Image 1 (spheres, one colour):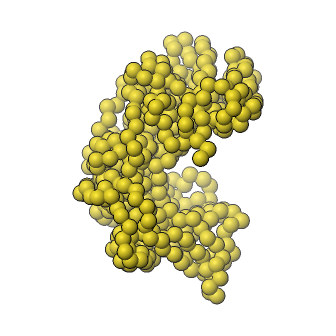
Image 2 (cartoon, helix red, strand yellow):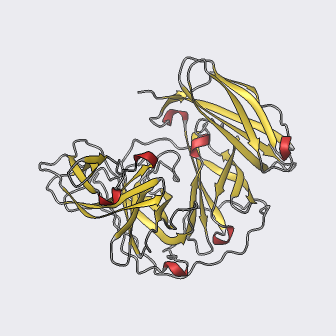
Length: 472
């Protein structure tokens, strides 16, 4: 099918100095789970975002054939670009290109060159994979620390194109519920942020392993300020697998080194083979607030008839108007643990979004059968030995548990461990995870779980699992 390139209609001018926000054209469609117990720290009443123009969602692209190599040569012109220091350790290289050639392709190499033409740096740029003649694509890259070239302000960015030679398929995408708002800097010394949120809907006939989304922000003169991506890979905020008609939230955060007045959002959906999903849902959750972070502890229950693996919980925080204010994912820590039918798996999600800007969470849970593992793994691994982690200690007003995990088999495996503390009512009140990671055959490591939120511990459980890593 034809690769989709969705360009959203320009927003009207957004005024950052008044707490910029953009209204959305309708809230998310998922069913909100039954709220859990009252927050430990009561949240203030949500303050509606300032009114703003409502963006018009981009049209759904019509289905088309799978892209095929074309005769001719892709040629890319840099329409506009920007380089700036986001901090003293990050140089941002961003912009927009247009394919002015007569072939399909994408920029391949990027070089920063000095006045003599000498290549000073070769930053890795995020682009779309398939750019047709006449189409545009944003791009972004970062150089960090000692890799930042001296005199970067005087360097020129040059690109080398590559002609598409693969036969990958694409599915169609429609973006809805767009909203944009200003956000305070996340770290001292960084610029303010400009967040763009919405939902990506698979309107094609093929499943996708996640839409690639790139957003570009412009100042009042139409010049590029920043570009960033929300690429759909493990550990990034999104359900990575979407069948036709399924949707997922997304969030892209831009540096507002200059006031951002307008933006565009672009999407691309590489198709994938169908996988078998398992019916999972959030059974209950508890909200624990603090001055800087809010934690949501809960449990996922398997409502299906088969065991689930590669489980992920995606939380979308929305305000009273249904506008998205944050998107957070948990897949990295839970994907190797098998959840049998009827069983529960604890989880924790944290957000730095102030409690006054959101009203409720919406959870989207995804998991697959053992026969539908992603290409990252080849099977469930059982040759894992866990020692200890069966008692809790409480030094320094916090709970701790220590142990050791060993790979007793002959394969390289990815191991994940979760510990959960429950109160007298059986609610999850604290969760800690030990990423652990890849284990070689015969390898052992010490494990420590630390619980800082729980004030009581009526029960304590440990969950663990492993998947065989695909080494090809």
